[in-house]
Length: 152
Image 1: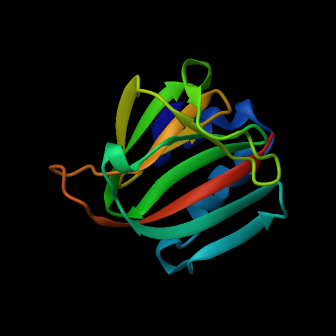
Image 2: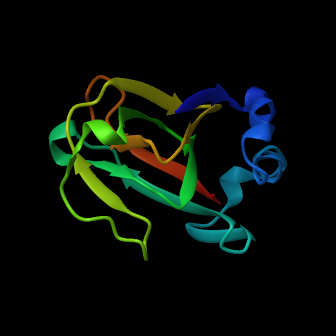
């Protein structure tokens, strides 16, 4: 997992052939004006999902992991915590679903980071993550988030 300020994202261009295009899109898009739902940047190889939801407690959450896509997650409004653990250290809650590239897992977070403002996190297949967690004083809050999907 990489946690970075937007201004430093281009330092990671060499990690994937689509990263430069993704980071340029982030820098040059009016993120606040994006409607909810899926927005394709380069077909199914590079797209974003714009979401709104209320953050939740750890007890209401689970880990997820992906095998075909890298996630870049950041918030347009609000802040949230994201739990992280190595995928291999967790237990399977449901079998991996290749059609949705989704693996539901359980276990304890090794680290927790807060994203919001200009902070993004890049999550690779080995980075199981528990997103959508309450960040501020344990209170639920409404957030608006972009989850960018980059094909491996």
